[in-house]
Length: 279
Image (cartoon, rainbow, N blue to C red; front, side, top):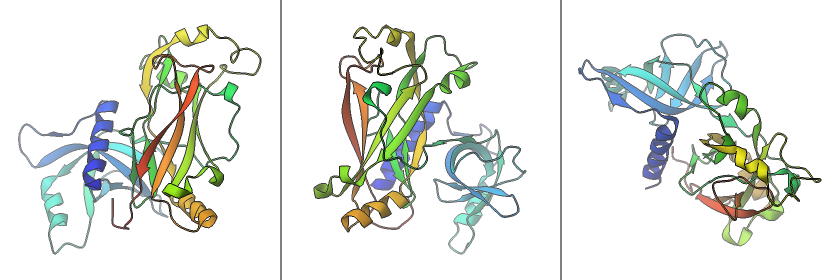
């Protein structure tokens, strides 16, 4: 059941970023697919990708870019005969030769959680983060999230990278905030916009007219390393957590507009795997 939920989540993410998997119209055995992968590098500079489907993608050509994080989505082609060969009962290899159709797009690593949260007057509400907008992956190694927030009016595919540089997601962890009675590790996700929020004006400006400039919805793809956080939880509480909760801030008055003054906390919870089988 969890593997099915995992597949459904990633299928939803594929739709978010505008890609789709497909079969060639003429069945020459070549398949085209979009995949979420864990990046693996060798000491000789080689890069391969551990697929969410269980095989290891081995690119036919050396990458022209340096990996930017441990997780990425990639679009590639492979020969179905090669897949059948490694899927056989007698095969000991999981390496699948692939041809990348574009450079990998790397998910943003939120880094090591801090224990010191920003002031409430410095953070902005997210548009959304629901239970279907995240997933625990690879034996509780990663928590992948797809929070949505609003970009400035006029943002297009041509200038989105420039606009995104003004938006920042950060994650925080304090073991005292854990819900030990429910075996839940608690993280706090906070969102900030450059130039928005300070103790002098934005928090006291009840009209928050600046928010009207943010009209373009954007879904980000980020991740947090969970394995060492789980170790911290066990060290603090004596046992492993069974779930991870992410507290974020939302607009209590209108989901469509970002706010500082009218933020309220909301929590979404994701189950952890109790076994060490591959997820």
